[in-house]
Length: 184
Image (tube, rainbow, N blue to C red; front, side, top):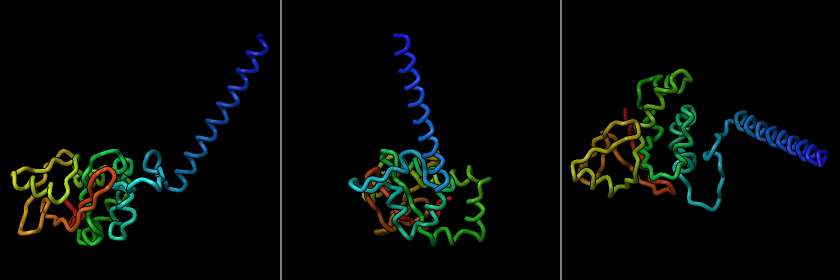
């Protein structure tokens, strides 16, 4: 009996060692390939795309995606939500002062970059109709960074803190509102 217990213990130890080595190899490979860990790296061809997947697929949001990756907050954009993201187009980043984007993308400015990006995300689901409703009620929109942004309606146009909402896209975990300015 003692011999059997020793063999089982040894077998479990070898199995555990193999499993830990495999997990470590997967994590190292993920880091080397710059793929995010956790939910953000899950590939699912059957489900509706989430906020991160919509942004990645959009040529007009490559700067935003680079910023999200530099801030290492991909996992936030794939959570169950609902979440509303105001996604500045590339030209919005280009309109910032020269060198501003490059400066924000530096590793030493990760906290500042994260602050800028979280100012573009609101808990809840606010499509165009929802934004108009909030504006009509005179409400300000609570953002993930703890700030409140003003929503205004001018004719058929909706603005969030001065950034015009160009389009609204439903995702599996919320809404992406494409905007023409970076909200600072």
